[in-house]
Image 1 (cartoon, protein in one colour):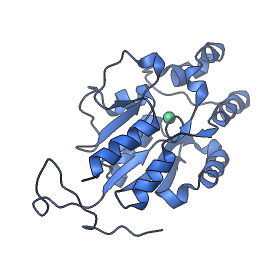
Image 2 (cartoon, rainbow, N blue to C red):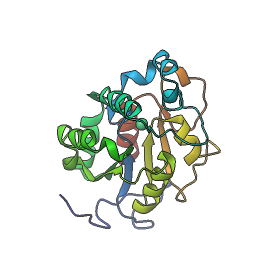
Image 3 (cartoon, rainbow, N blue to C red):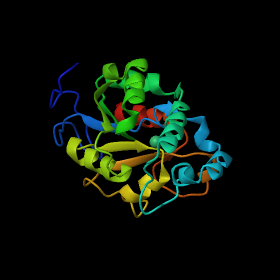
Image 4 (cartoon, rainbow, N blue to C red):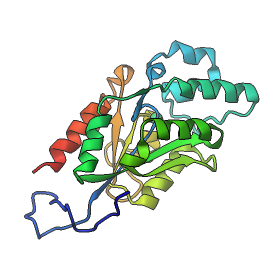
Length: 220
Ligand SMILES: [Mg+2]
Protein backbone atom coordinates (compact mmCIF):
# COMPACT_ATOMS: atom_id res chain seq x y z
CA UNK A 1 0.00 0.00 0.00
CA UNK A 2 1.16 3.48 -0.84
CA UNK A 3 2.46 5.67 1.94
CA UNK A 4 0.92 9.05 2.38
CA UNK A 5 3.12 11.71 0.81
CA UNK A 6 2.40 15.10 2.28
CA UNK A 7 2.47 18.03 -0.09
CA UNK A 8 2.30 15.96 -3.22
CA UNK A 9 -0.84 16.04 -5.26
CA UNK A 10 -1.81 19.06 -3.26
CA UNK A 11 -4.64 21.23 -4.45
CA UNK A 12 -6.01 24.62 -3.75
CA UNK A 13 -8.99 25.48 -1.65
CA UNK A 14 -11.35 28.39 -2.08
CA UNK A 15 -9.84 29.57 -5.34
CA UNK A 16 -6.44 30.38 -3.88
CA UNK A 17 -3.50 30.10 -6.23
CA UNK A 18 -1.17 27.14 -5.90
CA UNK A 19 1.47 27.88 -3.33
CA UNK A 20 -0.72 30.17 -1.28
CA UNK A 21 -2.51 27.36 0.43
CA UNK A 22 -0.88 24.01 0.17
CA UNK A 23 -2.14 21.12 2.16
CA UNK A 24 -1.82 17.40 2.04
CA UNK A 25 -4.20 15.05 0.33
CA UNK A 26 -7.89 15.04 1.17
CA UNK A 27 -9.08 12.26 3.43
CA UNK A 28 -12.45 10.77 2.68
CA UNK A 29 -14.23 8.19 4.80
CA UNK A 30 -16.88 5.87 3.39
CA UNK A 31 -19.53 3.92 5.24
CA UNK A 32 -19.98 0.32 4.02
CA UNK A 33 -23.67 -0.64 4.08
CA UNK A 34 -25.74 1.58 1.87
CA UNK A 35 -22.70 3.50 0.59
CA UNK A 36 -20.01 1.20 -0.83
CA UNK A 37 -22.50 -1.66 -0.84
CA UNK A 38 -25.86 -1.03 -2.38
CA UNK A 39 -28.49 -2.32 0.00
CA UNK A 40 -31.88 -2.82 -1.62
CA UNK A 41 -33.57 -3.76 1.62
CA UNK A 42 -33.03 -0.28 2.97
CA UNK A 43 -35.86 0.87 0.79
CA UNK A 44 -38.07 -2.06 1.66
CA UNK A 45 -39.67 -0.54 4.70
CA UNK A 46 -42.56 -2.92 5.37
CA UNK A 47 -39.93 -5.45 6.41
CA UNK A 48 -39.05 -3.20 9.29
CA UNK A 49 -42.48 -3.04 10.83
CA UNK A 50 -42.38 -6.81 11.05
CA UNK A 51 -39.19 -6.78 13.07
CA UNK A 52 -39.88 -3.86 15.33
CA UNK A 53 -36.37 -3.68 16.65
CA UNK A 54 -35.12 -2.97 13.13
CA UNK A 55 -37.28 0.10 12.81
CA UNK A 56 -34.78 2.73 13.89
CA UNK A 57 -32.19 1.15 11.62
CA UNK A 58 -34.36 1.00 8.52
CA UNK A 59 -36.47 4.05 9.05
CA UNK A 60 -33.48 6.14 9.97
CA UNK A 61 -35.39 7.21 13.02
CA UNK A 62 -33.56 9.59 15.22
CA UNK A 63 -33.73 7.28 18.22
CA UNK A 64 -31.92 8.26 21.39
CA UNK A 65 -29.69 5.25 21.06
CA UNK A 66 -29.16 2.83 18.23
CA UNK A 67 -30.31 -0.70 18.64
CA UNK A 68 -27.94 -3.45 19.66
CA UNK A 69 -29.21 -7.00 19.09
CA UNK A 70 -28.97 -9.03 22.26
CA UNK A 71 -30.63 -12.39 21.85
CA UNK A 72 -29.36 -15.05 19.46
CA UNK A 73 -32.48 -14.71 17.36
CA UNK A 74 -31.98 -10.98 17.03
CA UNK A 75 -28.33 -11.48 16.12
CA UNK A 76 -29.38 -14.03 13.52
CA UNK A 77 -31.86 -11.62 11.94
CA UNK A 78 -29.30 -8.81 12.11
CA UNK A 79 -26.75 -10.99 10.28
CA UNK A 80 -29.28 -11.90 7.61
CA UNK A 81 -30.07 -8.25 7.19
CA UNK A 82 -26.44 -7.45 6.53
CA UNK A 83 -26.23 -10.28 4.03
CA UNK A 84 -28.68 -8.30 1.96
CA UNK A 85 -25.94 -5.77 1.35
CA UNK A 86 -25.00 -7.87 -1.57
CA UNK A 87 -23.98 -5.64 -4.41
CA UNK A 88 -21.11 -3.25 -4.82
CA UNK A 89 -22.62 0.14 -5.60
CA UNK A 90 -22.15 1.80 -8.96
CA UNK A 91 -19.48 4.42 -8.60
CA UNK A 92 -17.07 2.18 -6.71
CA UNK A 93 -14.92 1.83 -9.83
CA UNK A 94 -14.68 5.59 -10.20
CA UNK A 95 -13.73 5.97 -6.53
CA UNK A 96 -10.97 3.44 -7.20
CA UNK A 97 -9.74 5.43 -10.19
CA UNK A 98 -9.72 8.71 -8.26
CA UNK A 99 -7.75 7.10 -5.44
CA UNK A 100 -5.31 5.57 -7.93
CA UNK A 101 -4.77 8.99 -9.47
CA UNK A 102 -3.83 10.15 -6.00
CA UNK A 103 -6.65 12.66 -5.70
CA UNK A 104 -7.58 11.60 -2.19
CA UNK A 105 -7.03 8.95 0.45
CA UNK A 106 -10.03 6.78 1.17
CA UNK A 107 -10.97 5.00 4.40
CA UNK A 108 -13.65 2.39 4.96
CA UNK A 109 -15.48 2.84 8.25
CA UNK A 110 -18.46 0.76 9.26
CA UNK A 111 -20.23 0.77 12.59
CA UNK A 112 -21.00 -2.93 12.16
CA UNK A 113 -20.73 -4.56 15.56
CA UNK A 114 -18.11 -7.11 16.54
CA UNK A 115 -20.32 -10.14 15.89
CA UNK A 116 -20.46 -9.11 12.21
CA UNK A 117 -16.68 -9.27 11.94
CA UNK A 118 -16.62 -12.32 9.68
CA UNK A 119 -19.10 -10.87 7.23
CA UNK A 120 -17.17 -7.60 7.27
CA UNK A 121 -13.93 -9.41 6.47
CA UNK A 122 -15.67 -11.33 3.70
CA UNK A 123 -16.68 -8.06 2.05
CA UNK A 124 -13.27 -6.47 2.53
CA UNK A 125 -11.80 -9.35 0.51
CA UNK A 126 -14.58 -9.55 -2.03
CA UNK A 127 -14.46 -5.88 -3.00
CA UNK A 128 -10.64 -5.79 -2.77
CA UNK A 129 -11.03 -3.00 -0.27
CA UNK A 130 -7.40 -3.01 0.79
CA UNK A 131 -6.34 -1.96 -2.71
CA UNK A 132 -8.46 1.16 -2.43
CA UNK A 133 -8.74 2.10 1.19
CA UNK A 134 -5.81 3.11 3.37
CA UNK A 135 -7.64 1.60 6.28
CA UNK A 136 -10.69 -0.60 6.83
CA UNK A 137 -12.35 -0.26 10.22
CA UNK A 138 -15.33 -1.81 11.95
CA UNK A 139 -16.91 -1.21 15.33
CA UNK A 140 -14.94 -3.78 17.35
CA UNK A 141 -15.96 -2.48 20.75
CA UNK A 142 -19.67 -2.13 19.93
CA UNK A 143 -19.86 1.61 20.47
CA UNK A 144 -23.03 3.45 19.49
CA UNK A 145 -22.79 3.75 15.69
CA UNK A 146 -22.84 7.55 15.65
CA UNK A 147 -20.24 7.76 18.43
CA UNK A 148 -18.03 5.26 16.65
CA UNK A 149 -18.17 7.22 13.42
CA UNK A 150 -17.50 10.50 15.16
CA UNK A 151 -14.58 8.89 16.96
CA UNK A 152 -13.09 7.63 13.67
CA UNK A 153 -13.69 10.92 11.84
CA UNK A 154 -11.71 12.68 14.55
CA UNK A 155 -9.04 10.02 14.86
CA UNK A 156 -8.31 9.91 11.13
CA UNK A 157 -8.88 13.66 10.76
CA UNK A 158 -11.21 13.17 7.82
CA UNK A 159 -12.23 15.99 5.53
CA UNK A 160 -15.31 14.17 4.26
CA UNK A 161 -17.44 11.31 5.42
CA UNK A 162 -20.01 9.60 3.19
CA UNK A 163 -22.99 8.16 5.09
CA UNK A 164 -26.45 6.89 4.14
CA UNK A 165 -28.18 6.80 7.51
CA UNK A 166 -30.06 10.03 8.18
CA UNK A 167 -30.30 9.20 11.88
CA UNK A 168 -26.52 9.07 12.11
CA UNK A 169 -26.09 12.21 10.02
CA UNK A 170 -28.38 14.12 12.35
CA UNK A 171 -26.19 13.08 15.25
CA UNK A 172 -22.95 13.91 13.46
CA UNK A 173 -24.43 17.06 12.07
CA UNK A 174 -27.23 18.21 14.38
CA UNK A 175 -28.06 21.36 12.48
CA UNK A 176 -28.18 19.56 9.18
CA UNK A 177 -26.18 22.20 7.39
CA UNK A 178 -23.00 22.69 9.34
CA UNK A 179 -21.69 19.32 10.36
CA UNK A 180 -20.06 19.11 13.74
CA UNK A 181 -17.42 16.60 14.71
CA UNK A 182 -13.98 17.58 13.59
CA UNK A 183 -13.99 21.18 12.60
CA UNK A 184 -14.68 21.44 8.91
CA UNK A 185 -15.57 17.83 8.17
CA UNK A 186 -18.32 17.58 5.61
CA UNK A 187 -20.81 14.76 5.90
CA UNK A 188 -22.13 13.71 2.50
CA UNK A 189 -25.50 11.99 2.57
CA UNK A 190 -26.50 9.24 0.15
CA UNK A 191 -30.24 9.54 0.45
CA UNK A 192 -33.12 7.53 -0.99
CA UNK A 193 -36.55 7.95 -2.53
CA UNK A 194 -38.37 8.02 0.82
CA UNK A 195 -36.31 10.90 2.17
CA UNK A 196 -36.67 13.04 -0.89
CA UNK A 197 -38.35 15.83 1.09
CA UNK A 198 -35.56 16.23 3.63
CA UNK A 199 -33.39 19.23 2.86
CA UNK A 200 -29.66 18.81 3.28
CA UNK A 201 -26.77 20.63 1.75
CA UNK A 202 -24.67 17.62 0.76
CA UNK A 203 -27.37 15.28 -0.45
CA UNK A 204 -26.78 12.67 -3.15
CA UNK A 205 -28.78 9.77 -4.49
CA UNK A 206 -26.00 7.31 -5.22
CA UNK A 207 -22.33 6.55 -4.78
CA UNK A 208 -21.94 7.41 -8.45
CA UNK A 209 -23.16 10.96 -7.74
CA UNK A 210 -20.68 11.23 -4.85
CA UNK A 211 -17.87 10.00 -7.11
CA UNK A 212 -18.86 12.60 -9.74
CA UNK A 213 -18.82 15.27 -7.02
CA UNK A 214 -15.25 14.40 -6.04
CA UNK A 215 -14.16 14.13 -9.65
CA UNK A 216 -15.44 17.65 -10.29
CA UNK A 217 -14.08 19.00 -7.02
CA UNK A 218 -10.60 17.61 -7.50
CA UNK A 219 -9.94 18.01 -11.19
CA UNK A 220 -8.39 21.26 -12.19
MG1 LIG B 1 -24.88 2.68 6.22
